[in-house]
Amino acid sequence: MPAGVVVPAAGNETAAEPVASAAPTALVVVVGTDRGYFDAVLGMGGEDAGGLTFPRFVVERRFPLVGQQLLIGRSSRSRGIHPDIDLSGPPKDPGVSHTHALLVAQPDGWAVVDLGSSNGTYLNDPQSAPVPSETPVPIAAGDRVFVGAWTCLSIRPA
Image (cartoon, rainbow, N blue to C red; front, top):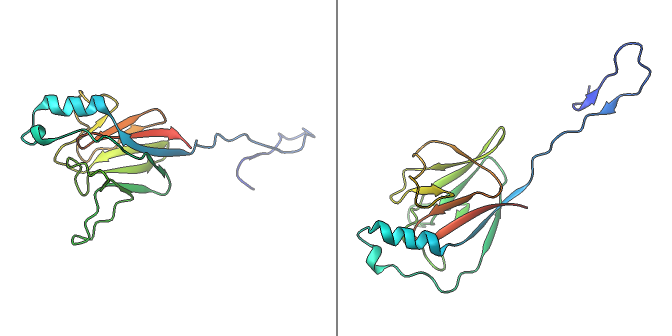
């Protein structure tokens, strides 16, 4: 019997009716910058913070959330790293690791996983503790994932 079809109880003459299924909402990742996050990074005062400048012009990029996982990072031809969400630039965010984080499909949605990045991955509040390394943290439409020195990945409906 096809999935999503309800068989009427015995003695009920009503034809089988399809069950309304809650199809997951298609999502996209919108990559941009966030001045508040940048200011928080500067406030943390890492050794390279003094040399950072907030980029003046950034073209917003969109990536559909599809498949089982999407690697977030910076490409490296010599190391054979080709992220699905490539943050190599322009402008190049020096705080993004080559293999910074993953977006992974879960049975009930998506999750972000920090891959032990040097500068951490933050969810929604850039002044909170970073997400734990190697631990899937659920994300949904409306969430913002912060990586690097100024990069913000907004999760939005497609």
